[in-house]
Structures are given as C-alpha cells and as structure tokens.
Length: 388
Image (cartoon, rainbow, N blue to C red; front, top):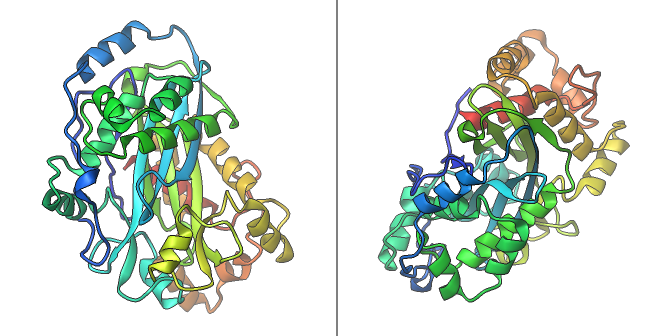
C-alpha cells in the first residue's frame, strides 16, 4: 500500500513558529495559480512562540472532550475549493486544524486518486486532473513566486492552522470578518490575502465538529497531531479523504468523507458551476461529497438493497477505529485489506468477482461495529494511511 505523508498540523500545545512545507508540484498556465493580490507582506506582531507559551499556560488539567468536524468552502476565488478539518474541546476552543485546497491542474501534475478513471468516465476534461495544492506544493508555489510571493502555499496553510489553534470559534469568526490588512497583522506569519477566508472555513469546520460525537482523551496533548490524506478506498469512481488525530501510538479521532462525480442536480463542492464553465468538469456532472449528499447517495444504496446510510457507515467505521492503537490497526489492515490489484488477481484465479457483486448495495455482514460497507477495510486503511 502506497502511503503519502501530508504536512502535519500541531495542536495549540505543540505548535512551532513555522512548519516545513510539503513536497510535490503545483498549478499550470491554463489554470491560473494565483494573482499578485494573493500575496501580501504581513506586519510583525506577537510571535508564534509567544502564542505557544500563552497556550501552554492555559493547558487544561485532566481528561478533555474532543470532537472533529470537516467542511468544504470557497476561501480563495472560484478556481478551487477548500477543505478544512478542525478538532475542538468542550469549551469550543480549536485544538487543531488542517486545511488543503483542490484545483484542476494540467495532467502532468499529481492528481487525486483515480484521476485517470474520472477522465475515462467522462467526468473530467482530457488533460486535466483535480489536484491537492499540498501534494503539488512546489509547482503551485512556483506559480505564486512568479506573482511575487515569497512563501510556499503549504507553509502558508501551516501558519494559518497554527494561528487558529488555541482560538475559540467566536474569536476566529470575529477575526475572519475583519479587513484583510488587520487579519494579516494578527496572523503575522502568513502572507495570503485570502487568510480571512481560510480562517472562516476553519471556524465552519469547528462549528460542524460541535454536532459530532465526542471522545475523551486523557493523554499528553503536546504529543497529538492532526493529519489528512487522500486514498482510493472504494473502487475507481471516487476518492476518499481521511483525517486522523493521533498521539503517535493511538488514533484518538478520525473522519472519513468521499468525493464522487454525481449528476448536476445534486449538491456539488463549492465553485462547481465555475468548474463546469471553465470546462474542467463536463456538463451534467458535479464533484460531490457523499456526506453532504447523504440522503441521495444512501437512497441509491437502498435501491440496491442496503439498509444503512453512507454517513452512518462512515461514522461506524470511525467509532471502531477511535481509541485503537496504530499497531492493532496495522495488524487488522494487513489481515483484511485487499487492494484493487490483489482483488483483480483473485478474480482471475477464482473466476468470480465478489466485490463487484456487493458493490451496488454496499452491504455485507460486518465485524466493524455495525458498518455494512463492502470496502470497510479500505476505509480503515485510509484512516491509517493518513498518519503515514
């Protein structure tokens, strides 16, 4: 199984003045990477180290109740969409945040899993791939540099995340609504003119977390990190995005969503209309979150015989994973996860494709806390892969 590490977002109790940028490549000439307005010089204010010291002085004693949430937003124009993940405590304080952004780039760049299949299926235009800006950090940042930027995109994201950690939802929302110059004065280590937009999407993710199930954590928060990564957990029609909060030994919290091209009557990710107008997504299609379109997607599963909604399935897998050690999960994945390549070999040898037979209804008897997805072990592998 191929694993790809993304830049890690440290908790408010372990944030550093700056984090290393991810490696990769980024945007193309036909898809404008940035404008000169995207880059602004920030004034010197309180340093990240000073903020970290203040946060440590406020370290809560005893167990904390943690929740995780994730949303899509339009933080930066109409050529991309942002995905933000946030972990909060019982006081609505953001403990950790993670942001990435997805944009259509030329096909020579690194696309999300199953990019070739999306083109073959007629959902994405030839010569383009949907790409993570973090995975294509070098390429995208080079385009920013030509427009005057002095800081890589992944490093900017990291600094915004570090600033958000330790703020309450209300504090972050208030700052996100202020003029960009004032925001950049506050977030002195970031240089993106759309920093208010990114802070706003993190705040939305934190609000979404309030609606999700809490877990109790009694370990050292200084050792906890938030990760995220894309994965091909379920066939070639979609890609999975998994987020994981871990202390290096245990999965504390996890979050799964999956993105698939649906008919254009469904709710697409932010800026879907612009993607169609630009010719990146073909007419009649939108890229859609399965969680956002839970009712529609689950109805199709129900028509094929499923009895459990897709979001409930994702939640059940998360509940199964949360609290388990990385070594235990590694062993479970090694014992049960079958990659696409291995499944093809098995099909050729047996003459039967059990996976396809189950795929439409998505359902089988499951040992993972009531989940009924045939690719349950793929989703578990996606969560584990995010940790790297």
